[in-house]
Length: 118
Image (cartoon, rainbow, N blue to C red; front, side):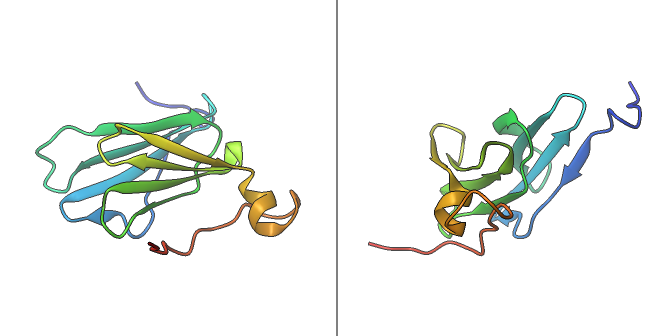
C-alpha cells in the first residue's frame, strides 16, 4: 500500500551502523508518531528483528564498543535507551537534556561515542 505525503515512512541510518555482521536501521512514522529500531544480518539472510519502538522521534543509534548494547537517543521522551543486542533487556536514562545541558532548555544532546570504565 503506498503512503501519502503525511504517511510516508522515513528511514535513517546512523554511522556506525555495522557491528561485525549486524546492521541497524531506524524508521520514523510521522502519521503514527512512532519510531522503531531494527537490526538485521548484513548479508540479508536473517529476518530483521525489532529491538525498540516508542512514541516520538529517535535521532541516533550507536553500538557499544563490544557490540553487546545499542544506545538509542530517544528525543521524543528525553531519554537514552540502552538495548541489549537481541532485545532481551533495556535500561533507560531519563531527563538527558537537563543532565547534560544543565537545564531543560536547548537541543537534545548528541552522543559522541562510548566511554568504557571499570
